[in-house]
Length: 277
Length: 296
Image 1 (cartoon, chains in turn yellow, purple):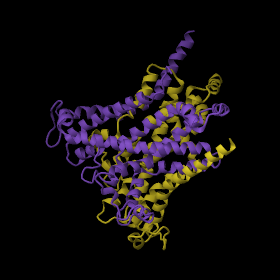
Image 2 (image 1 turned 180 degrees about the vertical axis):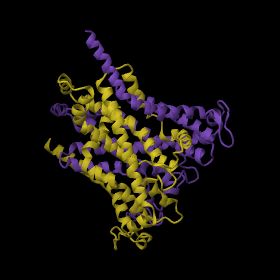
Image 3 (image 1 turned 90 degrees about the vertical axis):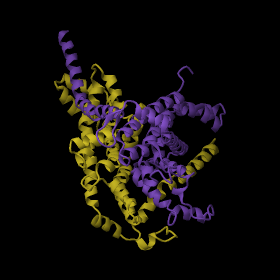
């Protein structure tokens, strides 16, 4: 038996080693591409360790391309949409979890069902409506659309988190004379912070990574985000791969930070969604 | 008595008021655009004023447009390759992570990285690595004596779809893995212990314990990731834009082209409605195939 588990562990370690190579190599390659000189990029024999590491690519994308603007846009859109989801979604999830009212269940499923529509299938009406509202190429339009894409997810997952918090504390608070709102803000809200953190991180990353709606509804630097900004490199006649590497790295910063520091929350949020459907 | 009844009514009113802002927001953001896209799908709206044409767009797409069915098949191929590869990888990684008790947090963080990297960035990176003249993939395969000539991975009429699917699998594996791992960890260890006492081997343990109890997680993982794969446009848009020729053209790119290149807005709206119907059918089908049988 002992030998068997040992064998199991070795094969597991081999699988993980291969998978980590597959995951990490492209990220490593992006990193070294971003710090290589153009001469080192355009050789038929790629170098696996940069010979003359340089920060010139980062300097040049921030000076010759509107990367400062893209970064501000990405942050504004992601923070704006996440904040809207927290304000609207937390209240809704709490309402669904704690109070019985007519249509509670069917409304929950209506919320969930709104995610059935592939984003591209709503691009035509959004494109037209955003035009009517004179919101074409604005950050506000981006925040609104990303809110639509993530709010149902946010509500659905947080219903589960609220369900898992015992009701007794809130009942005690109400007996002590707290109003319904006070009970929510003073008792339920602080207790549900881990769940809110988990869903907010996933919402933030999802919004930060959004591509399609930004590509179509934000053609200029006024509202363009980093994802679309990075893909602009391949629209050029001559692709500057080393600059693209630098731009890609900057776009990945939140992903890397969140995964390293908040891995636990991300796993919680993702699995809560999967288990509940 | 009257007081408690009053309180109950107030409670349910309060609950509804909490939900109301989100409900209004979603009605504006979902119901209205959905209604609008459905109505547009009955119009000819390309140049000039749109005019009502009934089901013309639908019959045109379903019965006269050969592209539609071809690109539908391409979409299915893409989903199949991506989720097939992603699922095998995700299952292997989940089983491995479940078997190893050390460095849990670090190991999981590394597997999650591929999920958190923006899909566009992942595909840009792969586009660069798969480059035929300076790409590192060709260099590695060349050094391993697998290929003798540089391969233009993104211009192979028959195999580029496989390349696209594998790139998607790279981004999709972590979510599949996380869902399966959660399912694995919910299986009580006692079952394996008693199976070991009864003399079951690893394969028997997998087929008799792990697989049946993992079915629900498998359903979630396959369903969620297939739906995402079906609607993903970032990867094909960045890597091939449907090429070479139309070898990797899919429903998502066809919809995009109709709306924003050919300016056939009504036709694109019809395609949108059909894509929604296909998504719903996919969900229904998958639920039926993998759902654990109640009467077993």
